[in-house]
Length: 263
Ligand SMILES: C[S@@+](CC[C@H](N)C(=O)[O-])C[C@H]1O[C@@H](n2cnc3c(N)ncnc32)[C@H](O)[C@@H]1O
Image (cartoon, rainbow, N blue to C red):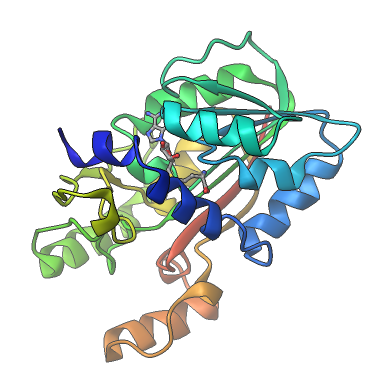
């Protein structure tokens, strides 16, 4: 059994996910809360134990969560009966077109096999003028690497800088994010954060990709504010340049947060 199949059956994994999604002062959560207030039908793609979705639930909205894990869905149904949870792969959703005015996904893109299929489904079920919110680690950034990433960082940096500088002049039709093999674990208790990464998302591609798919970008940030203190000299230089708003370093922070409106 591979790492993900083991984790998707594990209480321990979803307890950890629930703890992380209880960080309600995280910038992405504040943004989600803000957009949830005006929304009547909200969909969480990859809802885990449902903690994040429950936080957005109000009297005047209806909240739906989808996750591939039957374990996650049974935990979330027990914990938060007022929300509606379904076990399904995000690559094929059972909802009708234009069903939601807010669709979001938090820390899931990096665990998918095919994020583009998930984004196609997210777009389909989102009504025109509806809002899509995405957050994930920004592992595909030229200066970053996921825990399972095993490749030359120098090559990634050089190729990444070249891609960043050429990207404003090309049309981004597809997401060519690097695939990685999750770290093998025997017992879900051995889980360490993001050892189950399958793909390295990057905000630098995601934003032009969404624009190309007829989204208007309302907000995008690589959340430099969330970067760990210290690090190498290179990281300190890059962080200073990112924080003063110099492209492409603005895109090189630790997480991606994108708010986009379907046109
Ligand atoms: C790191 S957890 C994040 C959970 C939750 N969004 C949160 O922020 O706490 C990743 C979630 O993605 C789910 N997932 C991974 N691949 C999926 C897929 N193809 N379809 C649906 N859910 C998936 C996992 O079961 C897990 O709940």
